[in-house]
Image (tube, rainbow, N blue to C red; front, side, top):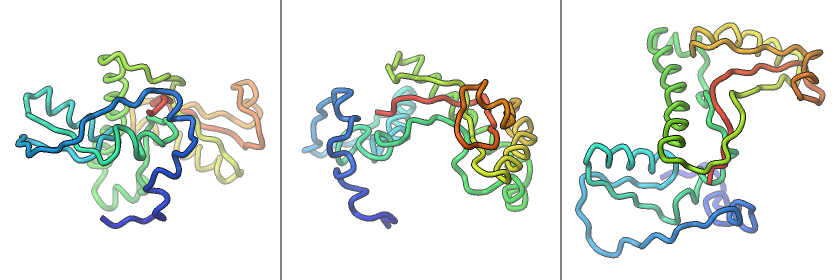
Length: 196
């Protein structure tokens, strides 16, 4: 596997002395020291791997999860705790040109469904994740960023079936938002959670 970041990134260094490890007990899981035959072996016990294993097991597929360290050790346990839309680098125009508008809308629906899946699993499994917030707010750091947020607000309904709240600079303090910002946009999909 090609690694694009320095070796430190993939080691335990970033976790040394980190508050993550003091806030919950990491369960002790046994090492796999014998040959094992299963239908599916999931490599990696981050959010995606554990979710895949759970869904496979629910369908009766004999599944094992293999992790080099411990559940949530990597990016899933180190992230900022955002369960939100986005993450792709291509904008709507680029997606439309490359794949077509129906496929873009299908992709956007999958983004929204992924957030709903996480919320559903938290509720079904009664997980203590310190969930907070309703939606995601982006702040405009420059005037041109606010113009971009205005454009995004116009496409949010088409992409996700929800209305975004555009917040002008003068209205930021009333929303509890302070700082040298030129406005904001809140999309009412997503939430924060404690990832580990």
